[in-house]
Length: 368
Image (cartoon, rainbow, N blue to C red; front, side):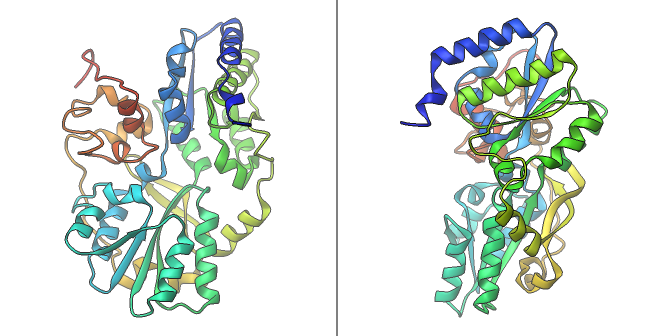
């Protein structure tokens, strides 16, 4: 397939890995931010092919995984209301909260529908004016433009029965929080290409300069990632700390102007709690005051919901990159894709799901 097979060429992969072995003279720890990158790295065994001393840490770049437990509980509480038609992407239905999950509400008769676009939810609201239609707006900057457009379309149509439960998070503040952590070991980052296709990468430039860390924007195919790792290591070996764009076929420095404008029109930056990580200042998006009428939290008065994580789940450590799924006693036994205890085993981009689908077995050394 054109523009796909070219980025999976094993001959070119070996050449890049050989070059990486020549360039690397010291141990370096690199974090890939996005769960899609993690899946390619683990599925293709890229982390196991790297030279000794080059270590990949899997970052908190799965939007489903970092959606806070309290927000999942709010979604469950709203979805259980008899007048509500609750819409979401499929992964969110199985994410466990402290009071159950959305698929459990559906099993008990709740009107919960999987959609492929927030505009589908707008159309449902148009077709059913007697129902309160809620869309669960989660994700990084990648999904924010479509969610912004859904609000704009609902406003243009005067839909009083459409709201969004917003749990958007932003990548640059998360990178800063990781670098500020006292136990941080990350020396370079692979930035997510789809996020940068929307936002560009100007926001990463002051981070690279301030913390003296290379940040390389990459795609999601094996050659994208191997080349991105090579570019990162080359910078580290040369003492440089810049933002470089490996994913030039899809990403421009300033991103997509129309998408960014839609985000700025509908949303405002806010503090946001990340599941397993805690609150990160200015790391999320909330509806701007002019669109407060479309805020599901306000409409259904679910601002406060008590929460508690499953005691066997170490998802927080996994999302921070301090432990691997194979370090968890529940991984592959009590916690599987069919019986997940935490979000990283549910989502298609979760680190635990990536390890499980690749057949990575639980460690017996150093396990809890």
